[in-house]
Amino acid sequence: MARTPSNMLPLSTTAPDFKLINTISNQFISLHDIVGTHGTVVMFICNHCPFVIHVNLMLVEVANHYKSKGIGFVAISSNDVENYPQDSPDKMKIHAKANSYPFPYLYDENQEVAKAYDAACTPDLFVFDKKLSLTYRGQLDDSRPENGKPVTGKDLKHALDCLIHGKPNTAVQKPSIGCNIKWK
Image 1: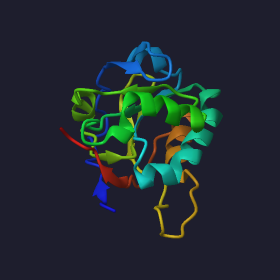
Image 2: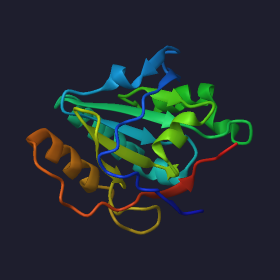
Image 3: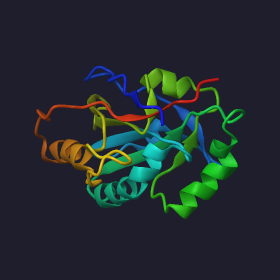
Image 4: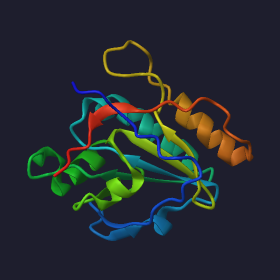
């Protein structure tokens, strides 16, 4: 299993806008459609990556918990579906429903959104404040497939708690590790 780290987009970067098809509803969704009152989480994931599969339940749990606290969530898959058909939009819809995703699951067909965010791997997580300024990027927590550490979501939860309570996030921000985005 390849282990690719996040590129760690500079903090304070403004969230790049996008308008992509939501594979669940077949409607276009923009960044501004999912912005939360306290902040927004943009996640680059895919269907087949063992690193994403490992944390899927926690991503759903975190989104379900924090949506009611004013945090918007969106997941984006940017993988090349010609060479990775398991990540095609029709399979994304099935995957999202099977995992009870409480957030839109968008398809980045031309990979421009992944490039704009400097996303490198799946999962790759980005947290923006209410002004869409980057406050956190990197890992969900220290758990990886086969490392024996429990999936807790502690790094992402800490970043979101800081946003909600108006506190600076002074914790060390570690890159996510996952499968590389499958570029065309």
